[in-house]
Amino acid sequence: MIQTAEPAPDNMTDEPLILCEGLVKIYKLEDVELLALQGLDLVVRRGEVMAIVGQSGSGKSTLMNILGGLDRPTAGRVLVGGRDLLQLSERKLNAYRRHHVGFVWQQTARNLIPYLNAQQNVELPMLMAGTRRRERRAWSNELLEAVGIAHRKDHKLDELSGGEQQRVAIAVALANKPDLLLADEPTGELDTVTARTIFDIFHRLNQQLGLTVVIVSHDAQIATHVARVVAIRDGKTSSETLRQPAESTEAIEDGEHQFVEYTVLDPAGRLQVPEEYRDRYGMAGRVTLEATEDGIVIRPVEGDDRPAPRSLVESDEPPPERANLRSRLSRRFGRKGGDGA
Image (tube, rainbow, N blue to C red; front, side, top):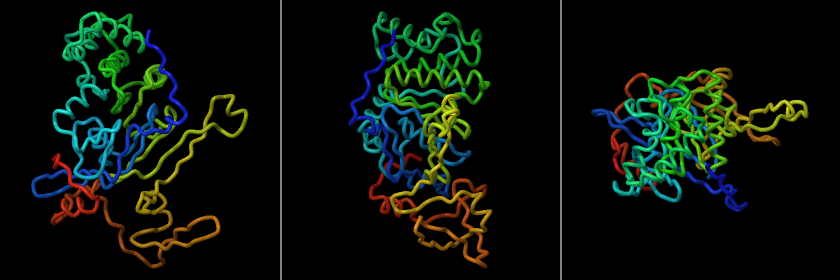
């Protein structure tokens, strides 16, 4: 059986496994440069189970690909387990993907090979890594047992339900014994009950293996399954939602929680005001800040009817050409990266 990981020492509980600072990603489409990430900052503690949410085009999938070593940022800093992914050679980046990160995708076709049975799918990454047969068999059995699918290990994909296939996919992702598990919409095609089972498996593996799990989703309801949700909007982290025990004794006994959302203030002092607030109070291009005893009040400028600038990420129209955009961003964030386009 998989042994439960030793609890981290007190001085290690807040050690970040992931640290992103001023992360920028530019995609070049013909003569147009599109900003997918615009100075994103993110910290994920080692051993955490958390989620990243955002609408389509917000930059969350770009961030996942960068964290997984599938893509390189244009500028900024991204550390995973102390490794600066922007500075790794192609050989070292390949080694990082093979040994330190596991992927679970929404589409099982990206996770599994249909003509292999469940156990053969789990053993395939180990076979390619040159792991001995006895070790492959022992570890695949442990993983299939851990995800609750050991009794179906000899079945092929067309003999498994969607939830069973996703359990096998999780076992495949853990075959290389990674430090980090990245899950892209892992329950997007599953019913509510099966989805809850998948989240329970993530938490159990987190406890047993000390695994750090980052789940990418468009569904804000994922907050009911994890302790922290980071929302991305326009290529930047905009808010964090923390799940906390409800204040009333009755609610705690019922296992209920309250959710507190915090707006993220970046190192330059910028924040993103939610669209619903901007619409409600008529905030457009300019606002005023008023210092009070309790904090800062943001007020719209009366009579200011200038339209707010449209986002480059969510815009349906191609962004305008931006002369020397790459060089200006590189100077702003203090370094240059590979083009990664």
